Image 1 (tube, helix red, strand yellow):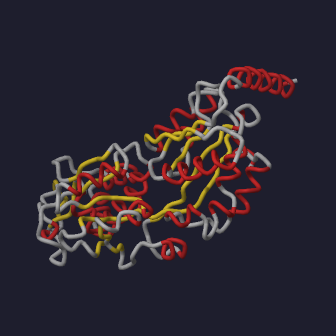
Image 2 (cartoon, rainbow, N blue to C red; image 1 turned 120 degrees about the horizontal axis):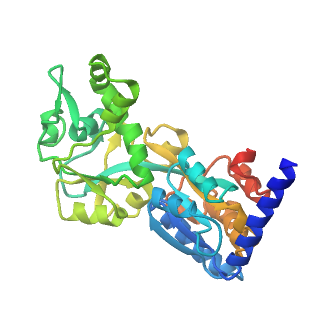
Image 3 (cartoon, rainbow, N blue to C red; image 1 turned 90 degrees about the horizontal axis):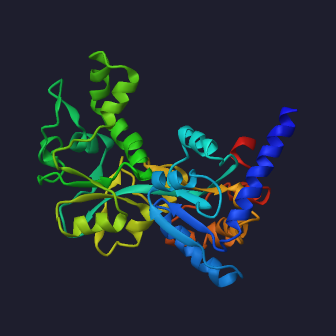
Length: 345
């Protein structure tokens, strides 16, 4: 009985969404600024090679894109959300509450988070997570004591770094890149410097310690960038001492103006990211609203085209732009072909 009711309900939702969505004939995508250039390349090629309109691809950040994705089904909602992090359980719950119950997760490949500065500026050629934490953490360890961050220059805590004022431009909190930066750089640096141990010893809970480790100073030396990487680049152009956080592909397409730092002694590249040597890398995703497949013309075709060997594989246009191909690309292709949702995996 309950199965019949559930099926009927699902069919009713599908019927309503199908009727509404039928009025729109182009695929609509929004989300991560990191995934944006890849999605734009694919959308343009799709429009040129298929008898469907070119998909509309917007940015706004991973969180913003997933928020729009989870608003519901129908022509007034987007079909795909791009994300530089995995969708969170709370977002899946929000989606479900709004009728977006069948979501297909597509991993397109991998990207690295790099730290770059003006090509003619100071020599920020080597970083450890501890350096970024000491520069940007809200509270740091000085002479065995946890204190509000007192550091003004990079040389204040590492004599091998330039003796110039700290000026960092990092992704705002709505960007998936920020989450990876917090977890793989700030959290690691907090542990490496001993600040994490000091926080726990002071009686902080594990959750509170993690939050404190990822908290960023608010005195102007660290600036959140809510726009895309072009805004970060503009800030560095106007500040010779600035250090920015970028995706690998963006850096590789701006090597005429930027120089990149190593992290843990490893230079970021497609090779070091693919091998796992470079410590600050992450998978990239997009999420498909299954209820729109067969309703929005070209949706499944676009998704399949995106992860085809010719597009996302070795030697394809996405790899040439900087994407590190996923070694399990064949499994992703089969997932789209069979429309396997997250709940079915």
